[in-house]
Image (cartoon, rainbow, N blue to C red; front, side, top):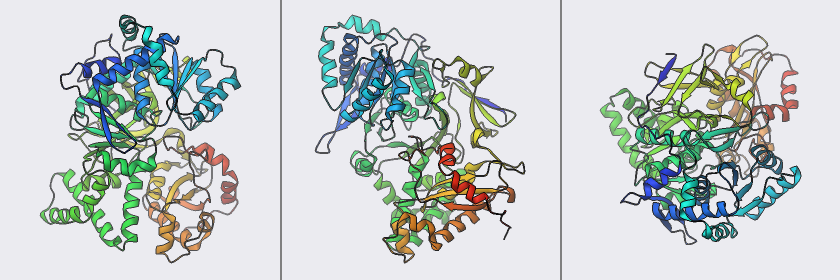
Length: 605
């Protein structure tokens, strides 16, 4: 199939905007809890729609009193926390445009975003963030920039006090300035290559997509449902889900430090979560390692195989009786413990950011957690397509959401159209024109549609490796299979314009000690020593041999090198959304790559 579209389920008035989502919830007799916050004693408290609306209005009035005008850009730089959502809506109530900034950004990155967007003010979490912002402003002499308000300081109280002189009528007039076609936020791409581009997402992108997604996922996002947000809100995926939950009346809690995620899951007990595939890989691998360390590795692997077999049979429409019995036994022995570790109430998980893979999808479905994999980009307000509880095909990223359409171009590229697609790139009409053909947005990803309109992602167009022999190789398939092993943190397949395919691999620092112990190797072995150890080399070679069985001889990895340092966001090799910056890895490890190809082509065993 070359094209598939789904008509919108929900029609939204053109003169509405994101603020109407909050007002609608506050007008309900049920007055749903939109957010939950945790106090110093670890107790969670709900924030009802009316209370949220009241505070949003107070801060919005403060923004108006401080000189923030309609259409002005206001930056936000903080970890994932409740105040982010509060000021996000306050900015929209004031008729302004929000500009998220990753809290890990350097002064030069912040300077680029503030300068390019023309931001007049910023919300920051702490003094450290304020210092970064002020340093960025001074370095580029950003004269349009005026104010910084700190969450950890008295910034919000200052605004609340400043807004007392603004009357309700003035705020309401400002709130209603924007319609669906007006820009709500400018989100700068993570920048795996080149300078980040400002994606103009409209109120319509958020409202129409949220309303239609909520209508498609009533079992997941509904009044009374609870989720805990731990992905960065500067990323479009978390930001969209946050708005979606307001549209659906679901409750959102936040955990700013992923180190606290496990206890927060257990105390808050969400009904659904959202995560990127690396999180699911970690949950699987950590569960496996705990079992192996306790001498129960055989039970875990048997249970995992049973979960996957049960899921595949369930998707096919019939689970044999013997498999049902085995599944029930492992539910008591294994699956229930994993669900309990995630709070005990999680039934659904939304996965995005990268392909999850068939194996993990079936595993989690088999243990009682339905992972709804979706697909999208910053430019598409996150989801173009997503699996739903009623329409799911594990291994795909689902069918287009209502109001969206997908087309597969002749070269395999995925094109998108609909309520999700951005207005354009801020101040870059050249890039906007380049990104569209006859109204269809070029995603840069490669995929295929099945007869039911379910989309599968096979790779990134720009990341296709063309060997010296002219063979096209999509690295993602091999990388995902190798990275699935607990010992491996990252894998980057190399070979563009080279005679054969090779790979750079990093080890998982958390998994390494347990692996060393199980293989009777000294616990004090360092990452650098492990990278050179024959036992580790043999383990990685076995992984690569297994992965090579899934591809042709020309696509197989012939040589690998284990590099001593992991690829992380701090090292500059991962984006904040945990995508590999392939060009940066190849640049920084060019000497390793050259060393690989300085040797004669390896002969097949």
